[in-house]
Amino acid sequence: MVFLKDEGSEFDAPLDKVWKLNQSEGQHSHPSLKNQTQGMEGEHPTLTYETMMPDGSLVKHKVRMSVFPPVGVVFETVEGPLKGSTSFQIYTPKGAKTGVTIVGEWKGSGIPDAQLQGAVMQFLETVYSEDRANLAKM
Image (cartoon, rainbow, N blue to C red; front, side, top):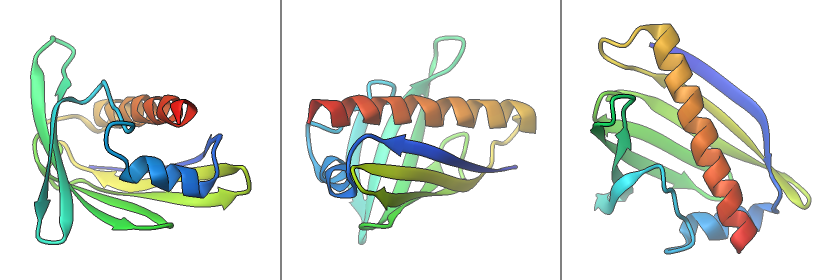
């Protein structure tokens, strides 16, 4: 189990534009997340996707989200190798920019903590870079 706090990242877009991206269909693209499907569990949107492992195989994940505009999003991993992980993505308005802070606890059965921490940080960097590109296209 790994607790992480990643703060200091910023999007070069105001908060309202970040939320427009989060709520858009077609503009919010994450090429690193393969075979994506969206659904609902009660009031909670879900996202099922696959990520590529170092050996080239794909592993399936399912995440349930609780959305709290304009503050942020809670992600709960309900299926996959990180099942039981919970994180908060918090947005801070900074005029023409938006601060991004991630706080969470990640679980990975059979994954050593150091390896899990590295994998989580790499994943967060990848989706952050993809969202920066998405915002630049809007």
